[in-house]
Amino acid sequence: MKKSLFGYGLTTKAIAERYRDEGGWDIYDDKFEISSGAPKLDEFGNALLNPSEFDPAASELEIPSPGFPPHHELVRKARNLISEYDYFDDYEGLKIWISGTNGKTTTTKMMQHLLERYGSQMGGNVGVPLAKLDKSAKIWVLETSSFTLHYTKHARPDIYVLLAITPDHLSWHGDFAEYERAKLSPLLAMREGSVALIPRAYESSAAAQNSLARVICYENEADLAQKFGIDLGEIKFRTPFLIDALLALCVEKILFDRCDAMRLNDFVIEGNKLEEFTDAHGRIWVNDTKATNIDACAQALKRYAGRKIHLILGGDDKGVDLRPLFAEFKKYDLQIYAIGSNTDKIVLLCDEYKLPCVRCEILQTAVSEISKRYRDADFKKSGASELEVQNLSANSRCDGDKAKENAKIGENTLQEGGGSSAASDDAFSPKRRTNDGETRNSQNSKNFENFKNSINSASEIALLSPACASLDQFKSYAERGEEFKKAVLNL
Image (tube, rainbow, N blue to C red; front, top):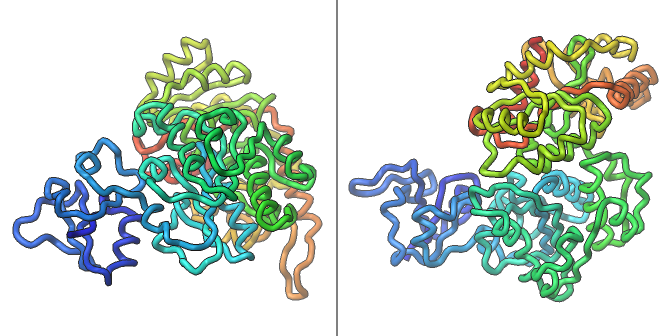
């Protein structure tokens, strides 16, 4: 009998590599041709096979890549299908799973930032397969997708952190009820002594009512802070990252009876999430390309309420009805710029909801159209006139080492926590290292604060928060974000 892997992606490759000494795996992927004679082998000696060659009677175990569609012929034929989480259920340390629709990556990374000193490792949907983790680590902090939960049969977390659930991946799951069921399923598997943090909306759900875990329900940020005795004034993060920060602190409180807000405040928000920067005219642009569903877009709009918002919207909506988001749009002063494969749908919805809309279809056109309508800002008064583009999220530290990691765009370097190449790596860092040690550069600190103040006082914002996936026009949401920044630089 053979062990089978469905899909040849990051997760299944890692499994095949880690357990190559236990005998070869049969790996099935649509991109592999039907073999004539002996099958082709990968570098670890595993057979690479076309799905038509799968014989369920000859397979003792099947593990799919997390995003492998449930309607695929391999899944329908499989008799012993389990998830990656099930396969590593023999891990004896403490398991923390983080799920929800939006914020799970940031929450996971914040949690790891707090817990790494206690011996934690981070993995899962955050980009590190479980096969790459150390089984001797004391804690596994795992970002957990609905895809993984759909396939998981018996693995369970010791702590389950669930953020809000809103419609997403409906074309994969079939409908919202199935998507919710997957997200709530860990509650029914958890044992006594385990803890779950879930939105109050699911307090009366069958999963919560029948769970053996201690289920703590929260209404919002204030409610969560009150329950765990956390002072919101000590946390620097704003919406939508505040709830992520609080959940990370709550888990530290549960495990170690402490909430190290000062340590958490050192955390730097990853790129492509509400990255705020300016163009040569001082106008503020925001790269929120990772907002690939309606709730992420809605959260971004809350952050800039009270301003004129030039919103770039569209892409692959994954079968989700956008009407709930358009109902939210009525609260804001919006000009919409429609892009992507659902451009026609967005234009029709704008007409239905009587919202101003510009048909753009491609991202570069949207940036150009916004530039025609976006007034110039008197940004030079802020003290940052030497910078053409400055990627300084209000939630990010200015960090010279971090800035060096950022990719160059044309003659400029967009720096996560720094300025363009017109200035030195740490030109806008509140602290700059000199030969005499680390000292505060008061002028740079003042300029940094001025930039943040200019964002807070701006009357207009240009926002890429598409509420849709990117694969209709781009290789990834990250590529979409880079193309957006390039287009702004080229104005």
